[in-house]
Image 1 (tube, rainbow, N blue to C red):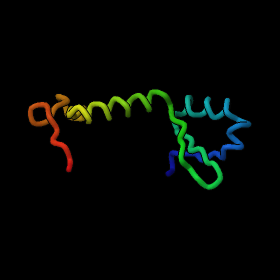
Image 2: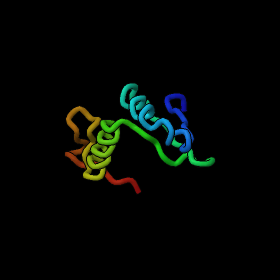
Image 3: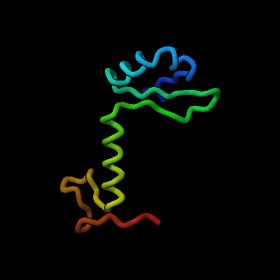
Image 4: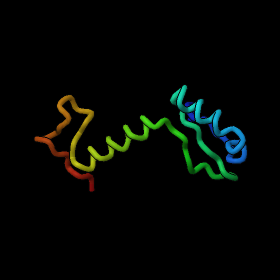
Length: 80
């Protein structure tokens, strides 16, 4: 993806402070690569909290992207 950087874990060990500042300053995630696997992403804390709240709202049947935050009387029908 164009808005992600990939950083090998061995390099991350050497430059963790730089990676932290880069993510905090730019808001762009950094994908952490260990061997050939890219399983972890370093993202800004506000972004993680935003998606956690969004997931909680969806699980509770709220639709936060609608103007009143609710659909069909406040419930979203579960997807089968």
